[in-house]
Amino acid sequence: MKKEAAVIDRNTKVISIRGLVKSFGDLHVLRGVDLDLYKGENLVVLGKSGTGKSVLIKIISGLLTQDAGMVNVLGKEVSQLKGRELDQLRLKIGFSFQNSALYDSMTIRQNLEFPLVRNRRDMTKGEVNKMVEIVLDAVGLSQTINQMPSELSGGQRKRIGIARTLILQPEIMLYDEPTAGLDPITCIDINNLINEVQARFHTSSIIITHDLTCAKMVGDRVVMLLDGQFQRQGTFEEVFATDEERVRLFHDYNFID
Ligand SMILES: Nc1ncnc2c1ncn2[C@@H]1O[C@H](COP(=O)(O)OP(=O)(O)OP(=O)(O)O)[C@@H](O)[C@H]1O
Image (cartoon, rainbow, N blue to C red; front, side):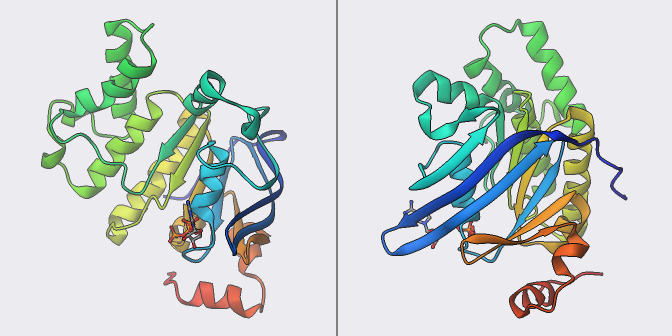
């Protein structure tokens, strides 16, 4: 399915990063990263394994602290936040991790209710039920509500994982390798879902991947992390319109139809 034109507000930055530096001992992972995520945008971060993509999203979500630079998320400087303030910001960020496992002993309904029961004690049972229905419908799996995770396919579990992230109504979605380990057809389903989530919930998203089909399908903008900095950025076509060998190699090792 072709991506519909997204409604992006280029006057509003939901994430703004300047001069971000992070090392682990002698390993200089991020060496001055600048990045903006605009409201409503799907931004794809491409990079080879070990280039620091996960470190970047851990810093954005306050799980790691940078050595230098500024990371502003929804108007707050993340490294300055502690305790309750950091928890509140994190509730506005939805993480869809590579191995976002569901609880095997709980039904799909219970899995989806879990984040609300923990974080939204103000909600009534009726409101919780309604939200479960909304997110299940959004991922096209309303019929699985009383099933167990073991009864679902890998692609369906991935969708439920995304629904569980959406149930807290995050403003920002962070997808870490959303298509990893899935067959090509299921990958396309998940890419379409990422676009549907953007259109329906007006989320702003960072999608970390080395799957170029995913980057092409979901990215309004693509950035490539090379040697600790974003060295290429633009549309998918713009990023790869270069003879630079490292970029060409990255492209040619991926299969694109
Ligand atoms: N807490 C940590 N302590 C020490 N080194 C770390 C830590 N976290 C990450 N690293 C190192 O930083 C580098 C970047 O890691 P990161 O997980 O961000 O890579 P990545 O680009 O997400 O790769 P992949 O696509 O394989 O997940 C790696 O060399 C990793 O070993």
